[in-house]
Amino acid sequence: MSRPVFRFAPSPNGALHLGHALSALTGFEMARRYGGRFLVRIEDIDTNRGRPEYVHAIFDDLAWLGIGWEEPVLSQSQHFADYRAAAEKLRALGVLYPCFATRNEIVAAADVTKLDPEGALVYPGLWRGRSKEDIEREHALGKPHALRIDMQRAIALIREKLGGAALSFTEFDTVGAAQKTVAEPGRWGDVLVLRKEIPASYFLAVVVDDARQGVTHVTRGMDLYAATDAQRVLQILLDLPEPLYHHHRLILDGNGRKLSKSRGDISLAHLRSEGASPAAIRRLLGLAE
Ligand code: GLU
Picture (cartoon, rainbow, N blue to C red):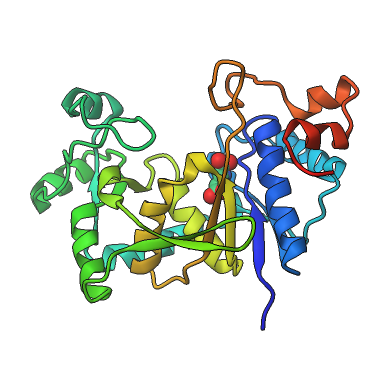
């Protein structure tokens, strides 16, 4: 039997904090326990926010924690053509449409009571079902567009593909027990598949690369639990294999909020500079030494 494949997939737009340490250590240790492989993937599709110095800092922090990974490391910014090709495949299925709406237009039209699982406004469908003429007019004006998935159409197609069976994913826990969970992608609305300024999106790039790298076990924070619903939709439509998922607890700050790079929450580098040892980090995370 081939070995299971685990991965840690940080976005290099800030310094790693304790939450990342928990993610990386969870994946690494599970890989060791199951005799699996462990990969690191740099999720740098957002070339405006990513910085090479953050990439170096990620490797530094991981090595310091005692984590080893396989080389070469995949950087998503090197693979835009593949995300575009995957989007083309979805387009051929008739589930994508161009969206020329600006952020302001979307906010103005959105229903403030309809929020996605991350608390963002659900896209109000401004460009869903628009005529060819409307689309050509915007193209002729040279306006940039994103590509969105018509989620209801995608769900209908999947229902057909699965012969009526529910769309689901399998969550496994640290002792290896698995639980099937029904996915509810409808709550995400028509998510972006290719963004306006970037020929990729988080949802698409993750599924393309988990498949490309043969990832069998996705370990990541609970904050991405609901994202799995939309990712399963893309996997089924693109005929990609289904990995198992483990979403671990989140590390919260003193106010009960998830740690965030953008708020400048205490980084691993800072803890290191204050003299913390890898063993102390593990203790802070509640992991066995
Ligand atoms: N790149 C994502 C992040 O840093 C994680 C992606 C994933 O694990 O699926 O939040």
